[in-house]
Length: 116
Image (tube, rainbow, N blue to C red; front, side, top):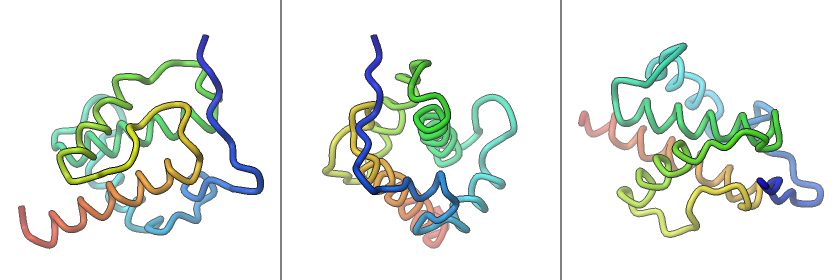
């Protein structure tokens, strides 16, 4: 049985509500890097697709459908870029998931600024 995510009292998930720290950047990156269907062509697009699918499943369906492959892909990306927090999983706090999305966006923007 899949456990529901850990909700924090009084916390509203920011990207779900359109109020993320990098909301505009997130939407711009998704529009450019994530195709409407299927896998993305770049690593950055694929990690955005995976974390978006995980995030959507969490708040839309309460994790009724497992998205373990997406969580693992996002975690590998995080570790490769120096993330020292917990792995992406269904029992993480809402605020921690928002921090994950912030970190991913920061790393993609850094990579684009370097031209790599």
